[in-house]
Amino acid sequence: MKGVLQRGNIWYISYSDAEGRRIREAISTDKRIAVLARQKRLVEVAEGKHLDVKKIEKIRFSDFADDYLKIHSSNNKSYYKDKINAGILKSFFRDKCLHEITSMDVERFKTERAKTVSVATTNRGLALLKSMFNRAIEWRKVKETPCRSVKLFKENNQILRYLEGDEMRKLIGSCDGYLKGIVTTALFTGMRKNEILSLKWSNCDFTRQIIRIINTKNKETRSIPMNELVRDTLMAISKHPDSPYIFYKNNGEPFINVRKSFDKLLKTCKIDKFRFHDMRHTYASQLAMSGVDLNTIRELLGHKSLQMTLRYAHLSPDHKRRAVDSLNRIGTNWAQRPSDEIEENLAVSQLIEKQ
Image 1 (cartoon, rainbow, N blue to C red):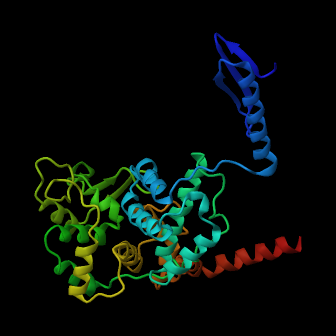
Image 2 (image 1 turned 45 degrees about the horizontal axis):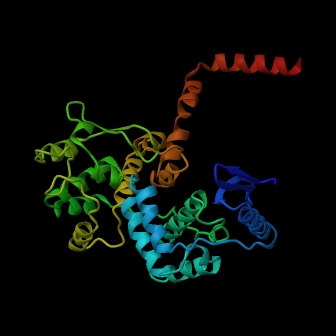
């Protein structure tokens, strides 16, 4: 009989599943049971195709979130933030299984989360949830995502918060210990937080006063000049005998985050509505206000396109004026030419026009 074959004393059946994959199963030493088993499998496949009746693997969201962190995020620089957001998602969806979460559930999470945190923070949680379900589809745990129709909040990334010179001096002056080096490096190199916290001595060339960032956000190598303050601050840090990191905990491991100590510093300085990332904005803003051209700022920040850097253009009050003033040379040269030469050129131009 087609689809039923014997190997030794065992009868096997073969058939195609709902996705067209060929399946072979060992059934019994009795041919009659094998025939009935194949007929049953064919009915199950037909139901799955035409009646959408299929066995659903019940996977708790919390269990899958843990697997996602181990497999997908463990080697990513965003692991710490992913772990925090995953905990919030697990708390919200509790004991729901992956297949039980609907788009309405996701919308509800979006609404409730936005009541307590900023839209940017809410978007980070939604982005993680979307990534989780995309991986779940790839790993054949679910067939579709409930996040497809859920849109992220629109964020206003044009609002800049940066420190003035007096605030910068106050911030650095109030630092002590490891935080002084971290804050000084952030304010005067524009490096991202994860780049600073993972900085190694091998990345620093103190002779040439250059910091090389190997694994950047854009997966490209970037070189950043050190001013004397950054160089002297870093060189004053004592090295850990067993750690390659410049900023390290007692066990030599790099800091994962410095949020608590940084928030405490801001309260001491009475600086409000300021984030660690705003020190990067401060660096770029001070460069723009000092007359540094936007393309150079782009290279220092490691932006791939000028679009991200253009937000600092308005901080250079005379950047357009300098561009227009560059034409003065032409006007000056023209004005300095002898009047008879000018009249001669005008006469030639008129002659050409008549022809």
